[in-house]
Length: 330
Image 1 (cartoon, rainbow, N blue to C red):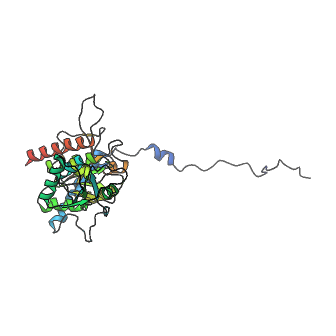
Image 2 (image 1 turned 180 degrees about the vertical axis):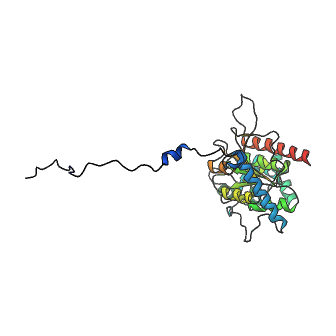
Image 3 (image 1 turned 45 degrees about the horizontal axis):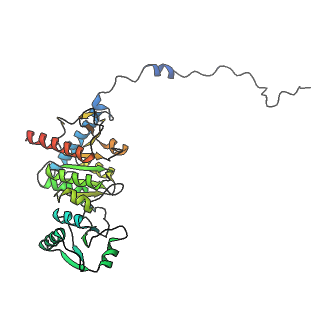
């Protein structure tokens, strides 16, 4: 009679020794071989630079065979802006907008409004530009301005901005026989910063500014006023990451501005190449995805008592340095 064992106990044979690893441990001890050179490591600055130079060589080779570097078929469409324009209200704001020559369609003036020097100058500037000047009743101007609008008897209608496609900026530079110099804004939300960057871009010979469609400011009347009517074009990208990748395929080097960058701005050796400078947001700086797209992350040397530079100031300093290096190389 067999004695019952413990519940769940196995009565099989005792397990013998297991098979060996087949030398896996010995293979692991052999190591991974010599450390790759810096330029052969894709995550290293030298590796990113080597990849960028290879893209540039490929783009030049395509250009030599005819057509624009990296040009592809299909129709380019910039993201559509709002179908509604903007209404600038208040005597000071309207006068500043007219002085800056921002695009406008109609100047609205309340009936029997009290005239002063600002009103007279605004009417004179609008008339010289050939804008429509309409007299409306005050209740109608109240309705147009909305509950938060303080119009002071005058308002200016500004149409929606006509954005370019990001690659159109690149093509315009190539067509002009110049080396492309572009800026891309990663999450800049202050219209005054955008306006100041557009103004600096025009001053230092950049071919345009790219803004993303979401989580970024567009060319509002406030941005226009700060730009002082500068001629630099603004393009809108449905996806900034994709737009930057398209530029890289055309041989454009991409540098991001960050206080902790691994490359110092003075003497930037990429300045004379096709270049796109990426400026991060006022608070968070460059996003992770955009940083990974950059061929180099560049820092601007500043004093120890200053934590960081304003986005528009950083862009201006970088544009000046690039313009200086390009001038000395020509």
